[in-house]
Length: 428
Image (cartoon, rainbow, N blue to C red; front, side):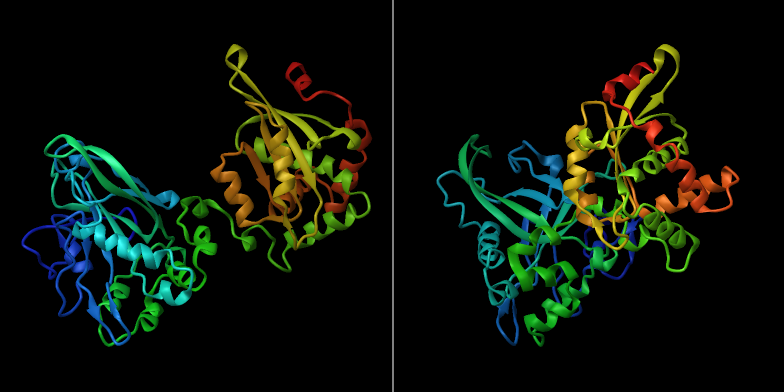
């Protein structure tokens, strides 16, 4: 099962056919031998408890939300789904005034699990069951019988709320549940139902079932709330680059070039700014955007910007001129770039400006995630890209080796340093 995958939930229940009506069959995917079907007939559906060797446990609680019913008597509220950022808000199953909202079966099951999900010891968290979330969707005008998997996780927060609606159109008390949706990176985005089947096996202890649990679940059981953000699903991670993808392969011509660059600027790292400006020009231009190189800022007054450039988008009266502020760091090849340096560059950007950060090193996942999630308008250029561009430019200029290019660029350093305001490039 994958997050976002849609399944056919049809009656009568049948686990024999792999597909039904052109969709994966929900009951085929979730079937456990000699066990009752895990149905989604209510909003909150705890799987029948198993009397295992170590304790009585619930294999999972299945949540079924019906967005198409929002605002009517059966669903006088609106659930929120954002699995790509690891969050779902779900309203409980009480809809009656003058009723304790903790008493309906579904709310009672979730509140019971919340005690385990907020546990401060491994022993308590080991007793927790996962919450699996499904959303009913419409397929080709068929409103009923289609469910989309939204992910799995734990109850992060519970809030007692007052709502309006229901059959009597009166106010009633209910609970809202915030679920932290866990990532499936360690499983290549696949949720393995065999874990749930193992949790339904009375012969297995909770500890034994962990062998089939997703990596994020095992991590949470071991370390609790302090690793919750590491466990949370964030799809931007899929757009981040691993460390090994930002560094040249050992023994490659790029690795040799990068080492030459680092050695060349040893003892004069500020002069790397001239090369960084050239690399930024090349990176932006190769994507088809016109780039106008500007100047280098004096070392004593750069304030987080080492060079200035300009991107030109459009033409004539329909042209937008965008200022580019660049930061250059000739750093140790095996040490990640610190987020505080990038933050300094971002802090200098005004609305409509773009940043560029050029390093001989690499960017950690945390730094990349911060840039992506906060939507910083900054271009990250890592050590591998630096080496690739230098080799390309040296070849285009007909130079015999990397050192020849470095000496050529370095000879222009003093001429490029200017005491000018960034906005002045708009008028060049």
